[in-house]
Length: 509
Image (cartoon, rainbow, N blue to C red; front, side, top):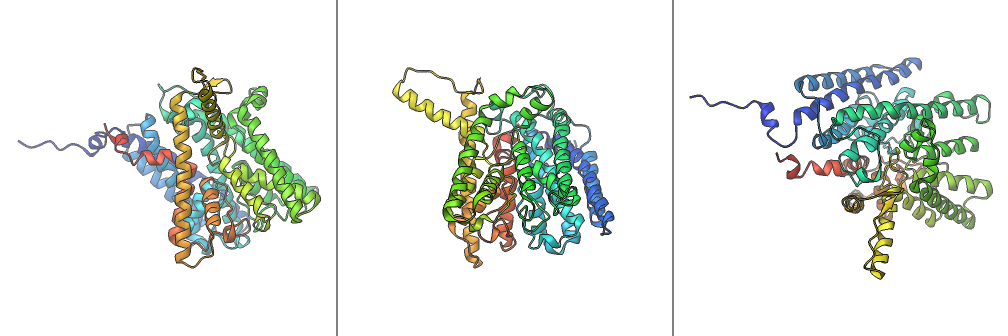
């Protein structure tokens, strides 16, 4: 009697995760990425540059997505367990396909490891770069860098407001009340509904900044601001990415441009659900009453004052310039945007401690910014206060609340675990970078390695030393470049969805 051989699809479904269903959604989403390559191809034609690298990359992306989708056809409804695999695999594939134009046509990024780094930096909205001479990039390739960050920002909004709360990552399910559909609906449907809800708002902010920056250039208020620069910087401001087609970031532009960008960085660092409620639902009181927003503005003001006072005291900058550069760079680092208006490599030591300290804090959850996020620090501070109160008065039972909502104990544990994991990964990355740099004879101090790891994992972009605001990550070895790429990847996905895939309990039926 012949023994029945189970089909591969049934074998895959023998585990606890529906792998074909997850891969089907990944293929469906990847194929739509192919449309993104049309924009840089059009820019290439407009500036009389080769468009074929983008067309080839787009075709490869489309073929891969369609083939993967058809091979796994028949299963489109997935749950939260499959969501971990979808999120982790999708971001990796998007960065890999986004690297193709660099490999095909850019001499500065002809090594696959460098191209992957640059692509991951864009799609993760980090803004770090291995390009030694940014000003030498063709216009189309420079715009592709900017556009990858803008696309990544859209994905991050969806990830933070729809996907991660449903996957119970870092306590998000209890911290943020979302109007997304309940658990009885498939995760894929939630992603689509969230994308439609917030994409219009994201697009509106981008268009508004483009228009304002372009007007500043057209009217002569900032003669350096061209239409190309207006579009490029608007893309990466709203995405809090910080890529710039200019070698010295926003330093060459007029003060009015820098203040304008600072305002939009603040908006991009605010919870988009709150912005949606203010702009679309016309409920501005929600923004004013939000604890995270109030605490964030207070911390930002305090950090800015310290930086400005330190600059004035050291004579590094004077008067209005000290105020503008101090406030701008503090906003940029706290929102993990990474634009710079002056090279803080040459600022007093206390300013660098403050700037990289606010990177660890981060901006609002539900924004395009990275790092730990303000609300988690807020919750931990409330937990410490509660523990002190209960030490003095053991009989007191006090639930912990954020914006009037009780945060359950499971979410509190998840927040503490996430913060410890984030700090642990940051320390491990810094250690590897320091050891690798020592082996290859690079000048990198322990503090510089910690600052670089903090910035990359937190999505801020610039580090210190040769990887500082006006520098490049190019001197790092291939191993260090891969480590930095992994830090960007882990930081953008908030680490947990990737780590879950390495546990046996996740795959158990």
